[in-house]
Amino acid sequence: MLKEFGRRVIRCCEEAGVPRATIDHLLRADKEMLLAARATLDAGIQVIDELLAREPEKPIEKVEVQ
Image (cartoon, rainbow, N blue to C red):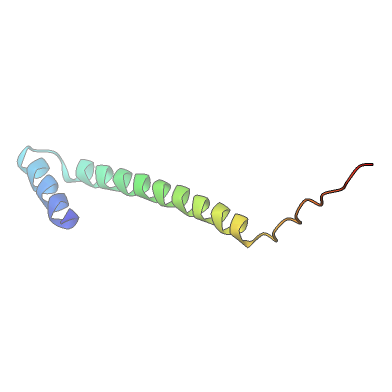
C-alpha cells in the first residue's frame, strides 16, 4: 500500500515537471524522518526494558514505635 502510494507521488511529481534530483532529495528526507522516529521508539523501548529488568525494591518494613 505505501509502496504504491510512493510510486504515485513520484509519478505525479514527474508529470508536474519536478526534477528527479529534487524527488530523490525529498525521498531521502522522508527516510531520515522515519529513521529518526525509529531511533526514538528504540530508545523508549530500551528504557522500558531496563526498568523491567531492575531488581525489585525491598518492601518497606513496618516498625512499631513504643
